[in-house]
Image (cartoon, rainbow, N blue to C red; front, side, top):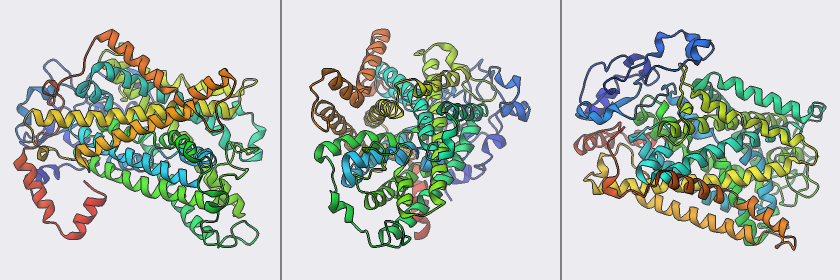
Length: 612
């Protein structure tokens, strides 16, 4: 066993935060120890508070935390002698456990984009476009996760990729990306609450309660869970992800039987279906334009995958927990998204009248529910609709988590009002959470005369989808610059505790795909499906519904540049040491990897596919 494993096996992964003790470093070693703090900086031990305060249920819990908890593990030979470790200690508490991180990575972003938005995507693009676009965006997401994983394990900074953009690229661009990310989640929150009204309306009895009532119920639920802070979000994500995974896998087994003609005799799938709907009405509904139009929906369905990197600052030992979470992203993309959408494309024609946005269609029907309705399979369609409702709640919580943590990081670096950096004794960035929650009531716009649920859904979906693409592109560009700086400053890739699957070339390919998708979206914005209208107002509406995020990013960058007057950093100027949490040498990593190579084939196979 290598020295790395010997040292890290002394810490139980489910209890390392408690066992290591935040009040001191414990036994000093050349390989791992608790975070050091700068002179005059106070360490705060949450265990000194009552359990109710730590859960966020007392008035005391809302008071400002007196200092960092020092709850992250530092690893590597001689690291304790580096004074730069004294800085970049997150004020947030490290409450997330490995199981939380795993399920956030695997099922956290499964929500309305897949369960509801895929219906409209099928109508616009057809089943061929559905699969093609999700594969392209899925590969892009995989490269993004590999890039953020490599960097976040080294630098589990507050603010995640925003802090990395400031450090690796340009503070002004980091400002733009940070605020773009905050606004992205802020507008997705009312979108998810809006989707709740669409989903619940599937049940006729639910229509006895006005839409405003359902919006209120879901909004209150999101507020109540946020009272518990990080732990509330992590636990809800764990259990809701378990449910989502179970239901999607169950649906795929049922769908496979239906495709083979094993459905009830009174349903539409009592005879062999196969690729029937790929021939009639066809695989593509609007040709090349249809393919281009689906990209934004596919991107929206994957939005939130990068939250794994953001959660690294609230994890005690990212080096041990992050690699497996990153690798599991591949299985989510392959099994959950691609296979389930393949089944949807086989079982539903793109001209099905029950699909969302279809002519005369019912906006309350998800394509997943629609399949079971057509099959005349009772009961399971209700289970899927319940799962969609829970997914809405889950993504709503992700909105608050992702937006508030990024806003708090912006405040810590002087790019947002300082009161947003307030972190209370329960580990909540309190005022940042309140700021994001304040966008929730925008969902009530759906109740105003003349407003329609579909219009609001389309506008918010467009803004969020392209914002996600800018975020992913920024992450991969950060990785490219990080690798360049790592090489220029005399480091070897062998020192990295986790290396991206395709290295820097994967980030280049992913970045090129982002640019291509953005060009495709510009094309569809200028020449939309059905042709350009003679009404200039309608032309402008269609364009901005497709490309709304671009002017937002440009405006944020302009403000950041005019405010700070910064320029992109050169490779030798990039700070690679401050806040770094892994300091292994080439020799130590070679010893560690030699031990892994000597493992039995079944252990190596499992590690390569699922673990770190």
